[in-house]
Amino acid sequence: MKKSKFIISIFITILIIIFPLIVNASQINPDDYKSSGPTVEDVEDMYTFGGSIAGIIQIVGTAVSIGTMIIIGIRYVISSADEKAEYKERMFPYFIGAVLLFGASTIVNIAYNMFSS
Image (cartoon, rainbow, N blue to C red; front, side, top):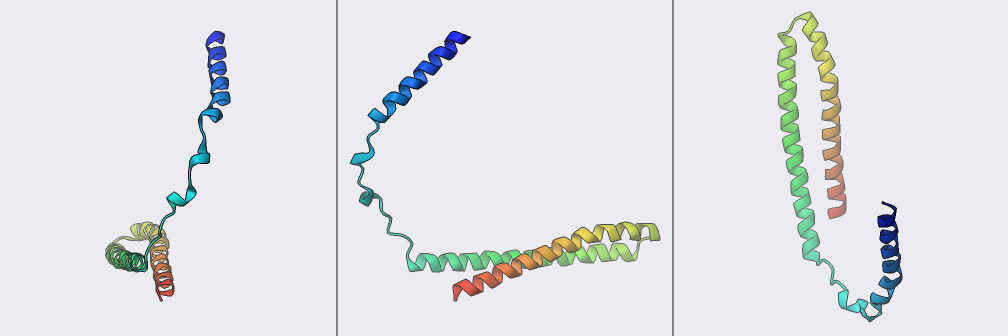
C-alpha cells in the first residue's frame, strides 16, 4: 500500500515538472479567437422571445391561480366547521404562492418593458 502511494506521488511530481515544458501557449494568437458578437437583430429577437415567455407564464399562472381559488372557495363553502379550519390553513400557502407568482411576473414584465424601450 505504501509502495503504490509512493509510486503515484513520484509520477505526479514528474508530471508537475514536465507538464509546463510540454505546454507552450506562446504560439497562440488571441486575435484569431475574437468573436463578432451579437447583432442588433439578435438582441431584438431575444427581447421578443423573452416577452413572449413572460406573457405565457403570466397567463398560465393567472389561470391556474384563479382555478385553484375557485376550487378552494367551493370546498370551503360546502365544508363543515372543522373542515373550514383545515381549508383556512391550506389557503395561506396558496396566497403566498399567488402573491409570488403575480409579483414575479409583474416584475419581469416591468423589467422587459423598461429594457426593451
